Length: 430
Image (tube, rainbow, N blue to C red; front, side):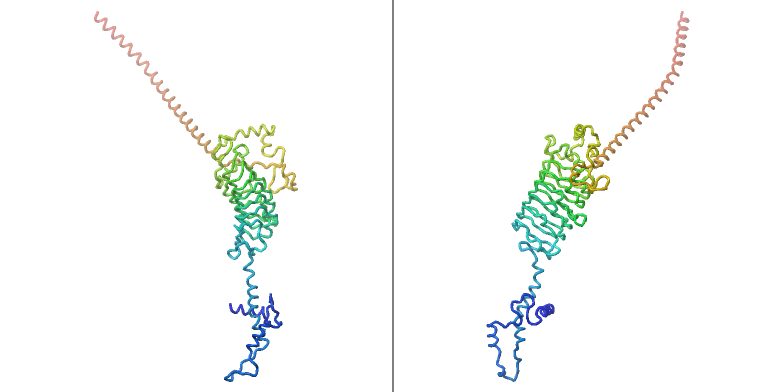
């Protein structure tokens, strides 16, 4: 360590002065107080100490080297300290700047994020008073992997807010005032066409009444999603079909209306459960006969009337109109028309209808096939048993009839002999 300080001293102060930030130039005369002290301490050149020892006389170089030593040390510390103090003033940095904690500071606006340590991975802004964010609030923060904005007053987030955060894996927006979400809100990493890495998304305890189509299309890597504690009445199945890797979904504490609008989403939840995913209880609020029941336990036969309503409202369109093949073209994931030649404009995207995912429920289909097979097997066994019983009974009856016919002539001969014997006995007596 001493060698490092000596080398830094030699670089910073090669001629006795400080190169960076020195308050006193190296060639300037010393202050008056220092000159007086030097004159008081320096012995005259004609006076020698006793014992014949000759001391070296101080010269100007010695004065210049002794004077700025303290200033050079300060310069060295100034060079060394800035990398360790590059954390925004209201925040605390941990783990060598990898975690920046700005939570619970009462912030109404974002701290100077350009002062974040290079390579920061976690930015915690929870428990503040943030009400709005600019579209470029998180620009040039591609190294962040976790962003916590929970327990604030955010009511609207601009489109493309997280566009530059291509490495973001965990986003927490718990307990805010969000009522709507822009379709391009979660478009992460679209600048260089990389796949978004978002794995954990928490939107619980907000005021969301719907999940727009397309808002989750870019989150193919998402595994954990929470929409609990909002104002959701129903959800579109097409909005969740792009989540191919989803494993955990929280939907509790919402005023669900278990009607025809939720039927297709119920099928999608059953498909998620069949894949091994987890969904918490979805308790119905309406209609009254289903209030308090979990829609996952409601038989699908209770939604059969929805097909009749679709047929009546479809105007004779049939299955083609319900599947999106009637009046409007089906939507494609890559934004191209069905031929794949030219992209569809934004105005025409609203006119397309997403095709229904089939099969509706593999688990229910497999269960139906198994039950039908068991019932058919039992019926076949019963029919075989009845046929065998009938054959055996018929053979026994035929054998009995044959034996009975054989015995009838013998019984007739015995009766005739008995009558002859009686006549003979009567004649002998006479």
